[in-house]
Length: 464
Image (cartoon, rainbow, N blue to C red; front, side):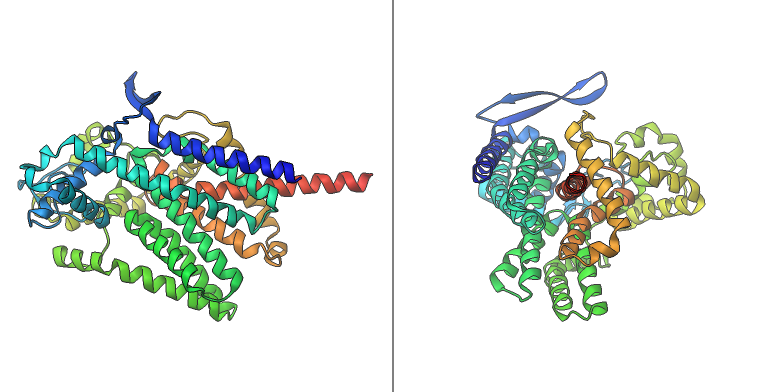
């Protein structure tokens, strides 16, 4: 037994090193083939072209940062894929996360923004160093997230299975391959999410607030939410669960913990609320959800992302735009509220189609492949089958599981998936939103297979 545990530890260390190597030195090359974008090559490069691997969002946010340095505030010169009806070149925007823009402000100042004359002439060299910085940050955070993951699974598994589960997490395709520099902030945010959740697990087991654990957990939660605002949905579910448990179970510690996390996370988002109120006259975090909501709920929605919807259905969409002749004169908040209203209108007028769309999104969500290239993965298939098995097991044996000491941990592990599912249904199915539920789906799938194994083992023992 000790020898097997030591072997698992060695494999875990090697897998973590391999994961680091892939994210620093392996470059997935994207190239068009038969009209579709596919990953067609993975090449080793000690001088990785981080700039070309960055999402175009980063380039757009860097331009906003350039304008911010010039004293123009949070403005943009692009419509982020949607039709642009405006006549002005620059307009105020709350589409992208503020923290990401501030990171570019800091980066450009360090790089030397004074030597850049035009927002569209930011050197590729800058994006190389920026991408390298983010990749290194992910590589630094990843071992801590692996350690946190191991601690989390140790609450419900024995030592050997906890090590095996952690090894599977490190080798899990979305973690090791699918989410690379292209979605680097998803990588960083997931690491922070796991570290934060492990801190919550510790606080729940000790049942008293240890300042060091609370500080690390809350800071990780705040940073994850600021980098990727949709992670807020996970913490909203967690906080709601804690407050609800505190009230109905009369557990003051749960109530205190939930309110504390809610207060701290809210305080760190106050500057964003203030800036958006200053720019648009209303309190909100981002205008992006309204556009994504429309892309997930319209006559042409098919459940997954459709980047070509604007060109493919140009004539049909024009009829919708004609309903609002003031579109060229609306600010970004008002414009994207128009999109949101159109989505709500379509849902109310087509409830049967919306229900079918939800079912379609659910089916797509559980397809065992990477949405970027649609390559089938047996690893994902086994995980998703096990996870669905867990949901059935959890539902059928809810009373029995509620009496076990594992219940609160299993419930918390389920919440990231619930939040990820909500995001995919509310918007459309995407790799970056499913990603936050993936590690916890893996844990719960392993839990299910463990229960099946124990059932088979017990029957064999009884037969003997």
